[in-house]
Amino acid sequence: MKQDVSNPPVAVLGPRLAADVVTMAREGARIRLDYSPASLTLVDRVIEAIRSERPPLQAVALTLRGFGAYTGEVLVREAGAAWVEFDAEERGTFGQPFGGQTGPGR
Image 1 (cartoon, rainbow, N blue to C red):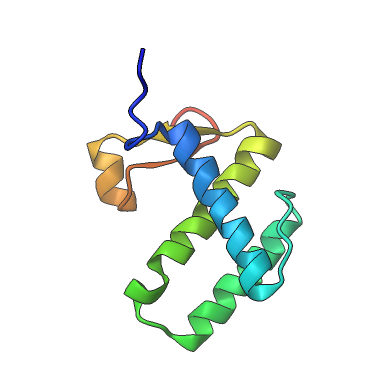
Image 2 (cartoon, helix red, strand yellow):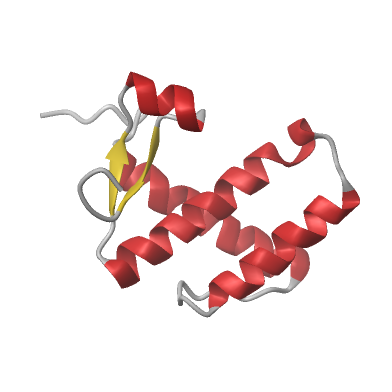
């Protein structure tokens, strides 16, 4: 069976976005993210610094989505979460097609 690489499954897309933000943080800001729960403190500081600068949302949307994916990947690795594709209602609520789930309905 041939896999559609232009539309990867969420189990691939989430980790890929997380890896991209790890690279961006390391190369752009010299911040080392190691997928540990403690590293989420660094993510929080970076997001707070972005927020304090008050940039236009369009300028930071992809970066923030990447940090969200990174946080999701930490939960997958450390808390037994799983990447899931959102249904139509969840897409409307969260504004994206996928996210992490730690348990039924969470």
